[in-house]
Length: 356
Image 1 (cartoon, rainbow, N blue to C red):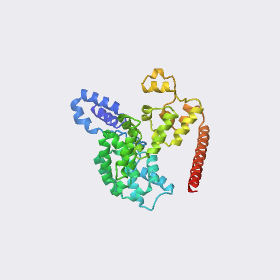
Image 2 (cartoon, rainbow, N blue to C red; image 1 turned 45 degrees about the horizontal axis):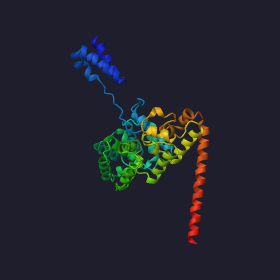
Image 3 (cartoon, rainbow, N blue to C red; image 1 turned 60 degrees about the horizontal axis):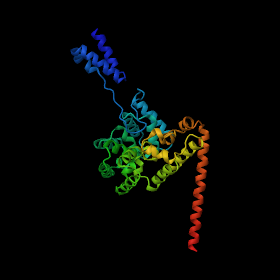
Image 4 (cartoon, one colour; image 1 turned 120 degrees about the vertical axis):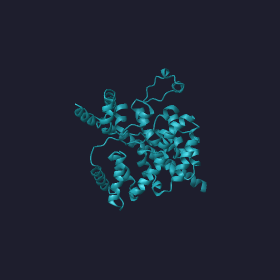
């Protein structure tokens, strides 16, 4: 009986169902404490827990030999015809390292094919750099976006910038996990030697958002600290004036990660499809005062409008086809192009008249 129980517990401890495993362990431990200590405890295999932080990161992958999976990814990378002249074996070792962090195959292929220069560094440099990043508190999900987004880390020239930007974000009282995630999702923050432009952009946000809202915004859209002030202001003005959307709803979306053209296209398509209507001043004021029962307008949220795929947006919220949305998007692009050309011609004619 004891032999049978030990075999079954050993098998169950390898099943990826953490809650069931915990209950089973507790029951066995309570009924057979001595047996548990001597026979069962040493058979347990710990199950890794996924760490949130960056997108397309998962700890669920096929139980396949890591060498085979690395070869498979390397073959896909070679098919992109973007790879520089490099050491094949070194590249496969880099891929194995990334697989040990449980990145999804598609994520590895996409990031390395778009940033092939990082494959020139020896795997030893990768391991050393990752170890240094871990000492700052960065975790496994942060590594690939950091190293592909800022090769200066692999060169070893970005550490002063990293320390400076972390200290700067801390001075703004931005929580530690948000600081780390913001840098991982926007490694451009590490390319500047001077934090004054970042401070300028932060101060610009405080003109519209409260300090707490700005912190939330940076966590959702860390690119606002590197985008130009004009680009950010154009998006804010459009949401305020054309869509009737205010600060709290803005901070709950990733709207600043999208272009102004994307924002305009999504909004105007939803408006013409009859599913979005700009709220009046009374509704906007009621929403700001959190008197939600007063607000009769049932618009999709800003996140539903801009953060969804074309398919979900067109079908779910607008009851239209993706083809119809794409045709509309092309029309908007043409209209914006014409407006830009007219503005350019007007500026040119003004310049000519001034020269006369």
